[in-house]
Amino acid sequence: MQRRMREHVPAATGLLTVVSLALVFGAALGAVPGAALPHAPDAVLSAIPHANAVVSAAAIGTISAGVRAIRRGRVGRHRRLMLASFALFVAFLVLYLYRIALEGPAAFPGPDGVYTYVYLPVLAIHITLAVLTLPFVYYALLLAWTRSASELRETVHARVGRVAAALWLVSFALGEVVYAMLYVIY
Image (cartoon, rainbow, N blue to C red; front, side, top):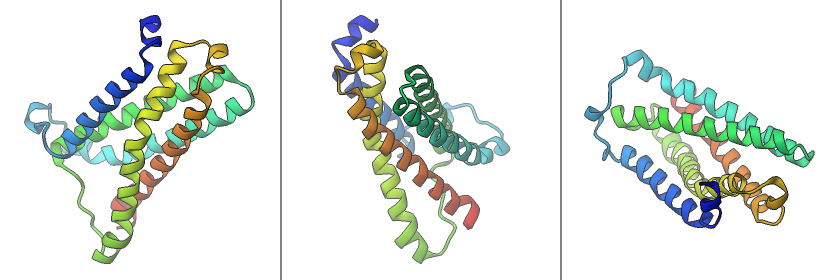
């Protein structure tokens, strides 16, 4: 599978990106029927945003540590940390999509001025960066999966990985700001 995928990394990146975005926007826009999903107890649904805040913080840590590892030449550690980051991202996404499919987006509980001039711009940037991050993350991961460490040096993996890590970090950090505004500050 890896050998066949090797020649199709751009196409696989595009396919994974489209499928991921269809799932996310399908759930956010109500195209995924909540009635088709098993319904968890209200306490579990209420805990998901808090669990996702922890997952996001952990992802910020693993991405940062992964960047630091590769700068120090620790390729194996970098690989493990980036895979952990991706696993955390998937866990976040599954929990988020499950909750949003059942309950819809959370309403902002704060003042209208904060909603208009702070929350919405932060949320818009967070969502935009999350969408932009996907193809970079998929491309970097697929290159790493289909090539040895020595072969990766001859690809754009490092350049794409730097962009992916930067976008990913800012997106996760802004997600924490959104969480704080929804569940902590107000």
